[in-house]
Length: 328
Image (cartoon, rainbow, N blue to C red):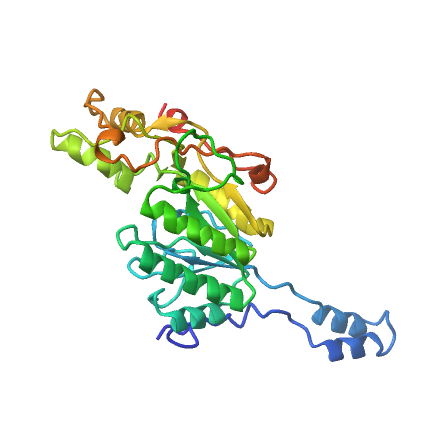
């Protein structure tokens, strides 16, 4: 067992990070003992001065694409506890023991042990469907609510129907696919708990080329095949570093009961985005497009996200960039 953990499921606050370093009665006695100008008096008061707690973030899916970048950009003043199931979090976070989010009691125990100020829920499994993802998320939300931690939930542009694009934060959702439906359900539940839902769109990174969205494009091209990329689906591709920075602003803001959009500013089709990536890595860009309307008509056509004053009141310094700028 790792000496940092008090038990196999939870995380214990290290002794060097107590909530406060103070014995109030002794401090009060010191104030009234002897000459206030004496060295003894000054030392006693100094010794019992309050030391604020180190703020702590608990991240689910901390070893994933977004979680790893979030931890790499961790502010020095924060501590991160990273939950994981398949991939441990990178250096910079205190890892929980391998934790199944489907185990409600284990999740509650882990959160009680970690005592985070904020819980950021990133973990999901796109292949598992709505049932498991809803159950896992509800276990996390219940555990966070039980200890009074703030909740930040990573959501998606696919909660919208895609009929017009440039959706604002407070517009009604109308998902057309299963992934968007269960994300929308969880957004509503987070709202009842006073949490924040942070929507994003098509998270990617120009480097390294091993991240999933690049492999969807580059692997077929390396085999002499054409990637299947829709020329009639518009998104707001979001660089993972920009997203991580924006998430840190949300986490540190103390925001409650709202929705923010953390997305790139460029409206671009999946096909156009793929051409930019192919060009960066020296591949041909004249491969034929695919069409959502022909092979996946239920997918929304245009789910581009607008970042209005609602988001800018919370996310004030992060500058989001589009693929054309990043890959220029």
